[in-house]
Length: 355
Image (cartoon, rainbow, N blue to C red; front, side):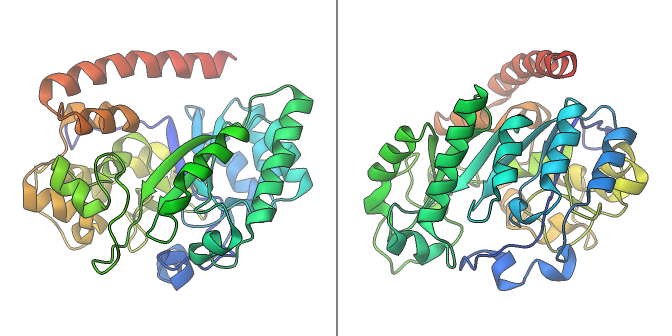
């Protein structure tokens, strides 16, 4: 796989809503930074149906990113449409789960929404609300309980739930209690390092051998979120109105084209997307009109000289993370892991389409 090789994504990221009701301090949506480019709006059902009709190769769509997908009033109908077409939906990037109607909760189970990452950074309202400003912990937990009851009623394991705990000095004392609560709720548990770091704050507990993203970079030699850049090949980000953002990190520039009007194949292989992929592999210099040029992830690659390799691009994020932490990030292990995953991915796509 080379930077200028065409890609044909069967999986995409599609923002269901770019608005959010919370005011989390480090979030660019809350600060208004995302609005100039992403705007404020919801994915429309008619557009979604047409997207599925025009792109029958799609098997998986991730609906969460900078907004709260459950604020989209047409979400239940979007879920039904995807279910009818055999397309797996996820909200693995995250949802605050504060505002979810009864009909939406039932639709999640009835239409087998695959998985949801619930952002819960504390086990008491006082701790939780320090970051999730405007959120109510009891409401979120009540929604999870209702969802679990519906899953039991329908006899379904879906959606699978993950409790995501962003680590801060103010909540690190509640990590183990959160882990216990997640287990009781039938949720997987994951700790995430925060974007922002304050050198004056007390040291954090060690997660994956590091207490901060800068410490992770120093320990493992790569950026904590380096894997996001691979989305330009594997799972490109589309805004709620069809404009192409490339990856879920980008909110400051477009790559051109509209997925609803031009098709996934065409926008994924536009001049800017192809050039950006070559940039991330170190094959061409940066250009001002490419959004990656000012991204900290690209700048880190540029300064370190550790560009994305063809084999690395193919490997799932969880496996890639495991390889990094064990210092096995080399050509041989990338090639072997990539080959095994291609076989597994082909089998999954076949299974998804055939039911």
